[in-house]
Image (cartoon, rainbow, N blue to C red; front, side, top):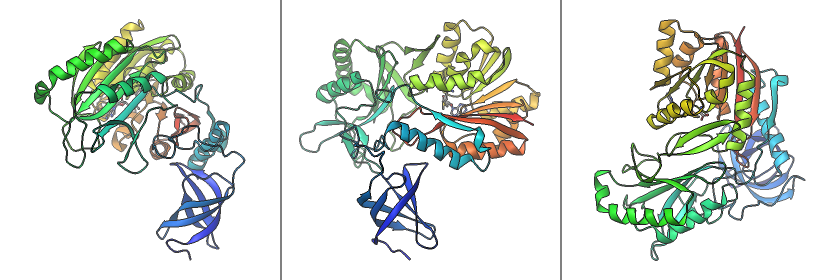
Length: 453
Ligand SMILES: C[S@@+](CC[C@H](N)C(=O)[O-])C[C@H]1O[C@@H](n2cnc3c(N)ncnc32)[C@H](O)[C@@H]1O
């Protein structure tokens, strides 16, 4: 039996969802998880934690490396927690992600119907939403902007990130050198600047910049003039900045955004183009991080819909999927709870000359239950919930309103849970197709078409 701190040799069997490789050890195949390892590699590892079911270990030496192992292309890879899997070539990573998807779903979906994951058209400079944390060094008060190291609140100052558009590196540096207020100190719950967020379109010529403040909107008056001066300076320097916002989040919380946001410069939105559709995107409304792969994802949804259909675009955001599929639709009903996204969705339907639409604001579950009471019917329901998936009673209610559900998910585990619920209502998966929206991370986005038998 292995013990804590034991040093042993193991061979990796496979990658699992969530950035860990799995190995089985000894006669009873005890499971050991290791970070930063690849299938078939032979490793010397040290056991770092242990329970009855599995252990975790760290690599001491790679005895036999995988032929797919590469040197991470980002110098900060080991210090920054925002990428995983930069240790193997992209084609191999996609094969592994497909195997992970098969592993998760093979007991509930025929393996032939689990299709190979579609690669992202771009694997560098693909992230078009960036959420940096802000901190300051103790003595020199230098501003640091970047991501936390894995499983910690230690900030890595990121001066160059190959996954985002280059202009973001330049704007970030300008903020480091010119921002006029102190950054947030988590331990003391003092200082003002907590986060810096960017939303940029795929042409890289329109950017929304949001500063998250550890203050209330009433306190803004204390630093208003400094901020307006700074915003003039930065918007003159970077013409791509279309709008600058302050979000107020004075609470001690892991949520990045607080409830109140004000605009201090420019426009309320930028415009994104996917194929022949145009979208207004607000500073705090959801839009897919990787617009290049988003088209691939939306194509799968569109190709699953028959002409002249009525669709429910639930968790619809700014209307991205419904509008993308509008050529196939007779009528679109969109449900969204974020006020800013609802405003953008209204503008987006008009911008794309779509007339037959209805937008329902508020919690999706509440609307699902109302639809069931009213005996409402749709030809297709598109579900694209957040990572936590759908609530069970909401899912049950909405399943009564259609025989076809297209479920788009960024979390295979909650997707599986929800498919199992839908199976109880006689829905059967017709296929599952992954799309790599998040290259060089463990994340997997997928679309499932479910039809009632
Ligand atoms: C994963 S995003 C998908 C957005 C959109 N389908 C797209 O592809 O751009 C999920 C969306 O659901 C919204 N949302 C989250 N919880 C919700 C709820 N309980 N009811 C309605 N909308 C919700 C979020 O504001 C967000 O816009």
